[in-house]
Structures are given as C-alpha cells and as structure tokens.
Length: 84
Length: 250
Length: 201
Image: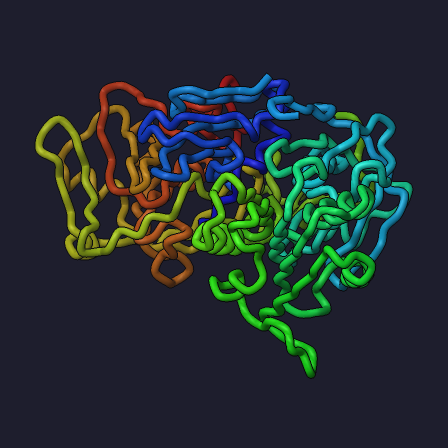
C-alpha cells in the first residue's frame, strides 16, 4: 500500500487547528524521531487518515471525519510544535 | 515570513469554472472564479469538494498551477479508475460550480525571496505545483537560476510543453530537461529512463551551490529523487517533497 | 448541504438505489478497492501462525496446520463503511466456529489482532454460527497481500473494517475492548443495515 505525505492533510488539519499544520513539528512517542507533519507517511485510502512516523511507522495521528464530527487521536505524538 | 502561519480560508467556498483548457489528452487546466480567494503562494494546493444530488460527497486535493496574482487555476489529470478526476476533466463546464477550500500547504512553497538556485523535479502531474513556481519566478523577473527535470511517460503526456519551451527560450537562467520513460519520438536524443543517480548528477545543481530542491510526483518517484539528491550532498532540509499516490490524486 | 455539483454522481451505478441487497447509503462496485491504514505486511508462511488466546494456553496453528483444517467456500456480499458494496464475492476459508471448537474455549468478546498492529473487536455471537471465517482465498486465488493475504478475517454481515486484514489471531475476552477504528469514531458494532457507521449511530 503506497502512502502519500502530510501535505495531503493540509486542508483537514488546517480546518481543525485553525493554523497551517504541515510545518508543525512532531516528536514520535515511540522512537523520538522529530520532523514536520509534511514528511509524515499518510495512509488516507481508508475509513480515516492514519499518519505514521517516517522512521518507525508508528501511528502518530488518526483522523476520522464524520458528517458532523471529527475524531482526532494524537496519542502517538509525544509533542507537537505548532507555529502561530 | 519564517514562522508565520499563512492561512487560507479554511472553510469551503463556492467556485465557478470560467475556463477549461485542454493540456494533453488526459489533463485539463480549470480556471476558477472564487469571490473571496486569498492569494496563494507557489506550491500550495487546494481541496475540491463535489456533492451529488443525493448528498454523496467526494473530496480531492489539487495543486495550484497559476502564479499568485494570475486567475486561479488547477490542472487535473484523468485517472482511469478515478471517481473525481474524470468528472473534472470530462464533465465540468464553464458556469458549473464546485466547492474549494484553501489555499493550503505551508511546507511545499517557493517564493522568490527564498532565492536559489532552484532544482524542480516533476514526476508526471507532479509538474503542476512546480509550474506555479516557474510562473511565479517568471513574473518576478526570472533572476533566480532554475532547472526543471520533468519525468513523463511520453512527450504527448508532457503538460505545459509549449509554455515551458517558451520560458526556457526567453529566460537563459531556466533550463528544462525531460526524461521520457515509456516511449520517445523518433530522433529523440534526450533522457529515456526513470530518474536515477547518474541522471540527477548530470541535471541537478551541484550541492556546493546551496540549491533548494522541490520534488513532486508519485511517492516512488519522490522517494527515489529525494534520496538521490541527498546522495549528491543536498542537505535534507533543502529538499522539499510532495508525494501523491501511485494513482495520482492525494 | 450547500449546493450540488451538476452531473456529479461518483462511482455509482444507476440501479444502485433499486437494489435490495445494497444497505442504506452504499453504492455498488464491480472492482475491489484496496484500503489500508498502514504498510502491507509480508509475513512468510513459514513464520505465520494463527492463535486463539483465551484463559488457558493459546491454541496455535502453523500455516500447514491451518490449511489442513476443513474449509468452506462462502459467497457473500461485503459492505465497506466508505460506501462501496460488492455483491457475490467468493472466498475460501476456515470457519471461526471450527477454530473456536478446536481451541475449546469461548468468551463473550473477541479482539482480532493482526500483523501491523491493527485490531478490531467483535461480540462472540458476531463470529459464530457460520457468520465468520479466516479466509485465505478470494475469487479462486490465494488472497493477495494488499487484500489481507495470507489470511484475513471475513465477517460479511458487518462493515468491512471488521474483516481484519493480515489477521494473526483472536483474543478472547470477558469484556469488550474497542479496536483501531472503534476507538476513533467508528461504531462499536457496525451493522450496515442499521447504518451503524459512527459513534452514537
């Protein structure tokens, strides 16, 4: 299964966070890899979007968009640094 | 500009198609009128949402082809098994309306004040955001040295070919190099293979010139080129990447 | 809903609405879309095993032992929560009833666990009495890795995210433990005929 990258989530994450998120920097809770959201491996041909660490493939974020709610799991990230 | 989060209108807004331009047999440029469009930066994309009569919705992302200040345009390539691209390429007519969200994307962006030289590597329809960069550069005075390496299956599938040739002729500081991976016209003397280390070594700016690289296309193309550039000594932070899936859309 | 894009229909076939075998909100497809939450695992068969983990010692089958079990060839309709449905799909697999009987255990709930870390939870009654299989062949051919091969769970009466790809076993539990999608918005049960897509549906 081929992945795309975090650029594909720019609109969705931007709408959720209210700021540009592809340049946000995340720290993987599993392996400590630090990098921009734009570089994450995104599997979005799925019931939701799964964003994985490019180094260890752990799940960093999950996003499910329902008709009137969005579910967001960030538990795979130790920290997210968001430029404001 | 560093550290500033530039936001587009982060909600859906209606857009009317004003013009459609056939680029190749599979690709069409769509020019939209969007009442409250916020100026984008070269490399950014927008999200398109289509709603059917029964409420069924589909969303896709498309890179912006136009330079900031030009009428807003995207270029869409028809995917044979696509759900949205056949509609956008074959069905949508001037006067029709769709919904857009954006511009979005703060990472894969080039503006003239970032300087160069710039190395733009396009895999198929990955050329779209790079064309926005080339057009932006041209409008700005075209000082920054630039090279575009464009990998396409055949010459017929090259999008913007005439415009690229015109720009390359008019601007001595712009080089355009093609590699045609599936079929070449008779007498073709250019590259005829998938991009590899040797091809990159011959076409990319040497690392000591401190270039900025932008690589866009299917995931496998992007990874091969990015790895190749880093192998030539490009610092990873100077290689910006945008991957779309093997089937082209995000 | 703001407005409609003239002429946009998505992938649907015209007779979808009339088809009584299509659950609400679904459209019929002739192809077999590949959906995935992560990279495709490639466990070699000589390292593959299937386990039923319960209160006692796990019951483990190697690939050869698993393939020696009696099999069935169910033809079923499948429904993905992303709205596509595919009718009359042909599979071959071992009934979960067979596997549970061999393990000699049961419990009110199961969690399917898989290569790559995916999980999904089911009530025992959703995987017994001929409702579920561990399938290793589709359309007469060994199951493709991108579709979950060497083996996936097949639970066609629920949305297809419950038919876990690359399944490696079932954990029997006294309590329900929501899985990968169930913890992130998707319905705990997932009955397509009641359109149980999301939490609270």
